[in-house]
Image (cartoon, rainbow, N blue to C red):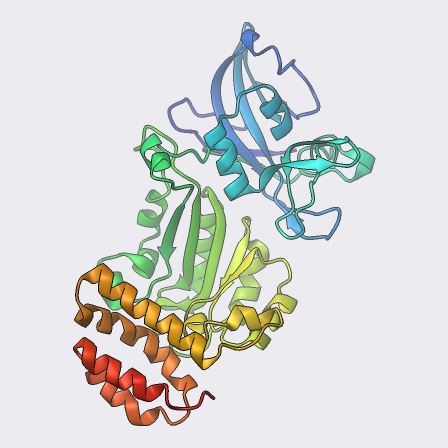
Length: 397
């Protein structure tokens, strides 16, 4: 077992070549006698190779709690299972919620044990992976923590813990958008503009300037600025960062939304992603959604943006439901319009927002071409309402 470690915030670095032993979870200084040890450093350790779920075969990231303990004879490092850490009373309730929300570590019933305990669950089928399988190499099918033949590396990440202020506001994670291609955003070096400078991008994940570990991050990204080949270096950076899910939109920044999403580039880089991956881009029909699921069955999710604005019932249809009726669309759009009016305090601001929705939705009405210009020119609420009333006299395609 080789271990790739990076410094955790606030403590001295721990490197692979240090003389202290690294104890796998099976070798046990008594965790329940913590009064004999002083906790020097703590982190979340994950395998850089995923292991198939015993039930459905979905690739599951193995994780555990990394402890550096100071005892009478010096420092000792080890990985402990989530259940052992929980039973020892060293996991706070806010952190337990973060584990559940972002790492899928949850109390789950075990038939073999006869009780529920805190453990890694499969993102796809929800099955408990079992401490025996993850940490003890039960029946020879152990993972990166327990199989003596497994030489894949481990990596210690800063614990995904929020500041108290963010917790009080109800946030459980941070979502970073490095995928927005809008010129007004990228011109300021934000959104996909962050991909121009990878050193600056890496600093956005750094904890060196913070007294507290940062929150777990979900990242949305494009493949690069001008070429999909840029993603090799970008992904190498992401793989070194504490990201709990990566959403990839396979276009480059300069494309905006022109052309087609580069599905071939997505397929090329997907096997090299060390974190769960969500796909985004050009999903506008239930058939496309199902085809994507069939092509990439191990995705952690599929993000749909413009497609669901154009067809608000898209996901319902994907599971066998009915398309949106004209009455449903009318109720949905009226609720949005009145909500915007209330939020902004004036109908003219709401009209501006509603035009963005109608840019995609108007194509669903047969013969809507005659009203597109009128809708674009509408400024006041009454002008917008007149055009919308006329649009809803048309049949849906």
